[in-house]
Length: 255
Ligand SMILES: O=C(O)[C@@H](CO)OP(=O)(O)O
Image (cartoon, rainbow, N blue to C red; front, side, top):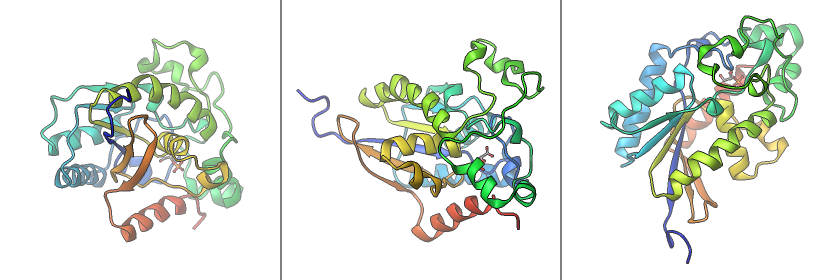
């Protein structure tokens, strides 16, 4: 017998609200920056949208980065859902941006060219230059990764490498929760979510280059009982969504 019959499973993915480094247009990656005031507002608005659309959750998954956790907390506030279990995991972290972390994207484009920055930001399998082993930004120096073998800690990541580290978590932790009938929300990042979306939608390496995920817009995926994606949609009107996606793309322009 098929598990769950014709039941449709819904999962909500959400990128964090505007962060301090989104506002300053800096490559962020694993740098742990907080949300701006606007980012907190965006997160609350996302929670209100979810509430208006009758979404509620039984379990939440976030990265271990403050901006994703803060975003989920604002949503939980709107949904009166702070009692819901939250699982925080490094595999949902943003893609590691290597030695680019901290640099301004527009200045980097002016220096290296927009094409190079597009390659670093959006090519599927070309990672940015790595951190040196003795770089003070190396994740091995961050207590939140202290329990992990150093071999798994990235010094840079392409989207492909991000897919490789996100998918085990998707299949081992998130999928069982969905199949168990729990209503799931995943609060993460532009590129860790692009990694999941690429996998679920079957987008090609070329198509994913143009796909940008805006901050704090709930993205709903519907699955059948075998977790085959049926459809997906943002809880946002088409015009606003396009503008917000284009704004993310424009961050890599030299201005
Ligand atoms: O800097 C980053 O970590 C990400 C998300 O903010 O940026 P981009 O959209 O350039 O991949």
